Structures are given as structure tokens and as C-alpha cells.
Image 1 (cartoon, rainbow, N blue to C red):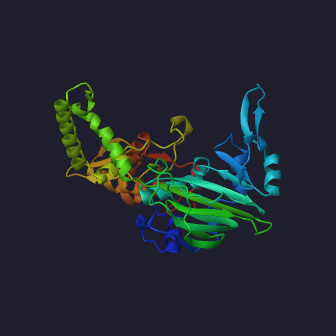
Image 2 (tube, rainbow, N blue to C red):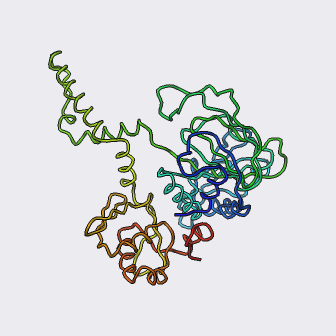
Image 3 (cartoon, helix red, strand yellow):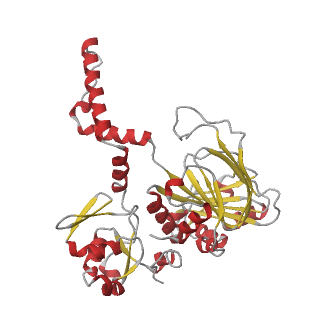
Length: 403
């Protein structure tokens, strides 16, 4: 999947792939000045918030560096049948933003098709789970205090400007659940300055940072933070612990009442089996299995009563694995393995590319069997029919998008 945002971020940061993710601080500028507003605008963000039932912690608001109680900008709306729904009170929110505040919408990719497609593209690029949080800060509002994140982030300044300070890590690769607390900020300032619309910045896990609009006067800032949670050796060991359930030895009770000699022998048996498991299941195998075990994505159900779509797109969390055998082709994704004849290979490569595919046009290129292959992939939920709403997330951003 070739996404314009990824291509321009790589160019801006001087990257040539995901290998630079988490390695060090980087900053640059997108080459297309119109790309940020194509991703999201302040008014589109407020429209998303207005039309959905949202509550803390999905949507949060901050003022003077402190989180505001949800009742200050939210309300329980009653339907005609007296059913209570939590909604953002846009008048209250407007007053807060007018005075200067920060509005945060977590997992914007769940609500907005453009962010959904962008996060899927980042996932295909990085082979890690990605989510997008969006921050709207108005006037002279302060941001969060100096803090660090337990994941790597890419920040894209979408509108306005905001001042940042980034410091190096004070503990190497800290984790959310860690052996030691990480509460003392580093004094080493890596970069300090103001991001303007189109600027991008990469902050590795553990780097301390803060952002504010104080001193910038009237105006606003809108930025998206794409969070990449990369897997660690701890995750590999946890996965191995789950694999150990396949062995009867590990499922047996630990005998606390046995004599010292018997306990020592039991320890040796477990240690030898654990060592064998460590050597048998590599980190690479864990990473590959994790991609295949990802759950199926959310999508509109494909029912005959809704009609058929002439365009389809692959919506797997990660690129499906296509394996060529001597007499067949196998497709693996989210716990499923599908088998096709070798004749289906050109259609599979096109349909599973991540780009939207217009079937009538594609049939002229790869053959009429693409319709049947698309039908199977749609039934198995690797692909879905392209709706106008989802199409809007691709158009102008992903190669092959269908207007």
C-alpha cells in the first residue's frame, strides 16, 4: 500500500523504511503543503466529536495543564424514550476552547476513514499496531507537562503551530509495566522549537517531551500523534509462556511438598524444557505469528440486500501472506489459510495489495477470474466492498484509489 503520508514522512525524515523507527529523534517537513488539511482539519475534528457519543477517556479536555472534569464539557442527553446517551456539549466545549484549552480525541482512526486508512498503511509499513490520537489546542493554552511515552510516536502538525521541548531518555527503553519507575527527566535537550503546519517529528520511546501554545498568542494547533507499539523481548517471552501450555510437563502442578532432591530434579526438567522452547521458537517466529493472529478488522457487513460493489479493498490489519506452492497458492491472514489454484495468483496480488481495486478494470488486466477471487476474499473478510465513505479515506492519498 503506497500512502502519500508515509512517502512524504520518509522523505522529510530521511528514512528509507521502518528500520529507523525508534532509533533516534528526527524532524522534517512534508513536501506537499496541502497534505495536512487532507488528513484532518480542526473543523472536521469538531464535527467528529459533535456527532458521536463520546466520553472520557476517549475524549478529554485540558486547561492550564490540568485535565478538566468531563461534566464541564459533556452531558447526558435524553432521547425521546428517556434513554441516556453521553455526548459532548459543543457550547460548553466552545467556551473552553475560546478561553484556551486542549481537546484530545484518542483513536481517531476508529471514527474517521482517512485516519483509519492512514493507520492501516502505517501498520502495513511497520508491521506493528498503530493508533492515531489528535490534539487541538487553542489560543494561549498550555499542553501536557514533561512526560515520556511507552511507545514510539510520529507527530504530524496538521494546522497552526505549537512549541515543543524534547529531551533524551533517562532510562533505556522504559516500559509501561517495568522493573523500575522512570520519574526523573533527563536534562539533555535534544530539540526545542515550534512546529508549523506540515512539520513532522519522530520521538522514540522514553524520550521526555512537552508541548504548549503559551506565548504564541491567539490561534490554534492541531496535530496527530501516530503511536507505534513495537514488540520487545518481554513480549516474546510472554508468547513463549503461552506456547508452553502445549506441553504436558508445563501444565503439571508444581509440587511444593516434594523433598529437596525431587524438587531439584523437577526444576532441571522444567529448565531443560524451557531452554528447548527458547531455541525452538525464535523472536522472528513470534513476530510472524503475531501478525497472523491479529483479529479481523471492523467493517460494514457484506450482505446481498445491500447490493454489490464494483470496487474492493483489502482491510487486513497486516499484509496477508501469499505463499506459492508447486500446484497451489496459499493466503494466510488473521488466523485463516485459504487455498487457491495457481491461476488466481495475479488476482490475489492485486486484490491483497492494500490499494482499492475496480473489478471491471482489473478484469482486463488479470482476467475475469478476479471477480470470483474477490468474492471469496470478501466472504472471508480479507477484503470488503468499497463504500463512498471508506473511499474518501483513500482518494488522493493511496495509489489506485477509486473516486
